[in-house]
Amino acid sequence: MAHRLGFAGKKLLRMVLLLLGVSLAAFLLMSASPLDPLQTNVGQAALGTMSQEQIAQLEDYWGVNDPPLERYLGWLTDVLHGDLGTSLLYRVPVTQVLAERLKNSLWLMAAAWVLSGVLGLLLGTVAAACRGRWPDRLIRGWCLLISSTPTFWLAILLLMVFSVWLGWLPIGLSVPIGAEASAVTLADRLRHAILPALTLSVTGLANMTLHTREKLCDVLESDYVLFARARGESTLSILWHHGLRNMALPAITLQFGSISEIFGGSVLVEQVFSYQGLGQCAVTAGLGSDLPLLLGVTVVSAALVFGGNLIADLLYGVVDPKIRARVRAHGRKGGA
Image 1: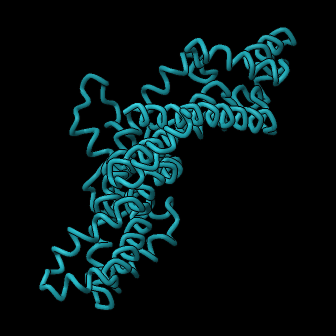
Image 2: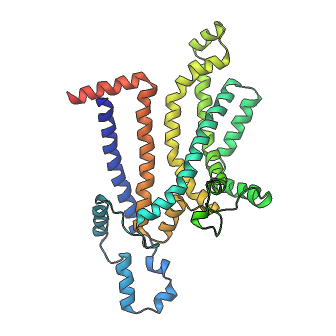
Image 3: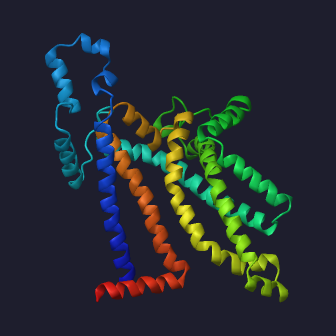
């Protein structure tokens, strides 16, 4: 147990350093942006009607005249005290904006993550079991087609078919238009999340399917599987007892690594569906030069990705005893 805690502690320390680097990179990119916060959010015409004192007050509000290093160190100091700052666009604490948007995005990304993993595992298993036959060719062709399809184009296509032509699902947004927050039900949120989640899961499905197929094909061609077939074991038994264990570690790596791809795809998907989530919040903050909000979105999204990789590393020891023994030996070596 102590070895696992030590291993997790080192991973957490590395995650903190990576979050620091990601926030610094995002801050430098925003500082080098050619967008003028005043012209972007106030407008050139409105600025022309303001006095120099009013413009100076706006520049102080947006931090235009502050040195970049001073702004970053001030933001970092506030973060260490649990304060992510105030959104310049929404004029509320960044934590409040992130809490509202993250709640919507978690529905979306969690559903897409589970669907892509489960369906990818099943389709890859079917393709490997039917290698060379028409189900295998059909699944591989579909995966190659989907992997080469832009996410935003697929989102627009699904929106046209199921919302505009058939009218089965809502056109956009994360809740019904004009509904009060207290009147929004769980069923409403689920209906509005179906198309965005389906889009994200379909785009992330191809990698898992093709990877599972290739790994299972290698397992089915191994000597111990040939020996199991000679003993009369069925294909289902071979897949369950031999295939699942051998493809577990690569599948865990690929599945938890896909969190970053799902979040990256959610930025485009949420824009197409006008879904009020974390991805659309990042676009709004970037275009509006809302530095505190963008840094908050960057840190939260990076923490989700790094947290997924950490969970994958911890699951390795549960799935494979050899890795658990290696971690224990490394811990003894570090303690010595």
